[in-house]
Every structure is written in C-alpha cells, then in structure tokens.
Image 1 (cartoon, rainbow, N blue to C red):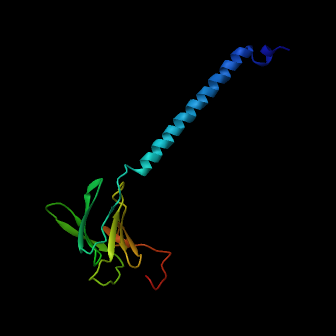
Image 2: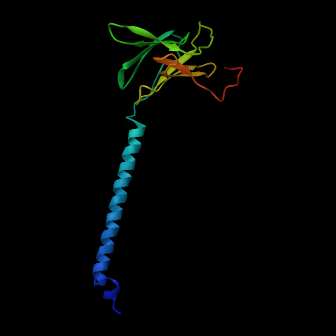
Image 3: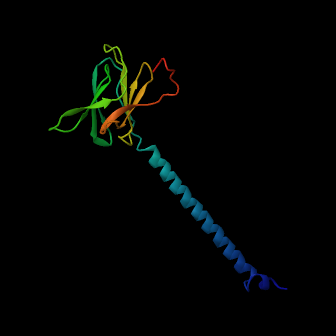
Length: 159
C-alpha cells in the first residue's frame, strides 16, 4: 500500500500544494467578505452628517431642511406644533396635518423636530415636555401627516 494509492495517484508533495492553495483561497474569501462587511457598516453609519433638529431656543418658528433631500423643507411652529412643508414657488407652504394633536401652552417652546441625515422620510415631531411623538408618514385620511406614536414608557395620564 503506497501513499499514491490513497491520494489518487498524486504524490505527497502535490497534495501539500493543493492544500496550501485551498487554504489561500479560503483566506482570500474571508478577506473579501470582511471588506464587504466593512463597506456595509460604513453605508449604514452614513456620511458622518448629523441629523437635522430644531433648536430649543425660545424662537417660535424655525425652518429646517434635510441634508440629502432639498424637497424635504419644513417650517415648524415650535410653540403650537404646527408644521408646513415647502412645495415650491407656485404652491408655497402646505400644512402637514398632525393627527391626535395634544393641548399645550402656546406661549413657550413645546416641540422639536428631528429629521434623519441619511433618509429624509424618517422625520419625528416631539413634545419636549411630555415625550409624546408623531412620525411623518401616510395619514389616516390619505396624504402625508404626522401620526401619533404609541409611547410605551408614558403613563395614560401623560398622554
């Protein structure tokens, strides 16, 4: 019984070269996979641009625009929680309905808006005093609206 019989006619040296080649191929595949994982992670992190939020200063109105989408330009009344979207020169500003609006003291800043730096469709309106939030999206009556979100950390009295 020789080695050649069990290795299909290949010498021990040839088998060693084949195994080394297989190991190198696996190392290259692992390296390529790690590169793709790193690229995917970088894509998820974004370009390093910060999200857009209104300031909590005591000014009533603020204009914000998504860094990646100029069509997402909003005028926010931070006292009353009203939001208007800029639709261009012809249409001007159109108010975005806020479903299940809460009652607030309209003499102080009550609201802040948040808009994702990487996806302008991710937009929230926050009552800074109660924690209640509304998400921008499809409304109950069709069209875009700020829909009230279920906030599990809020007690029924706070809502």
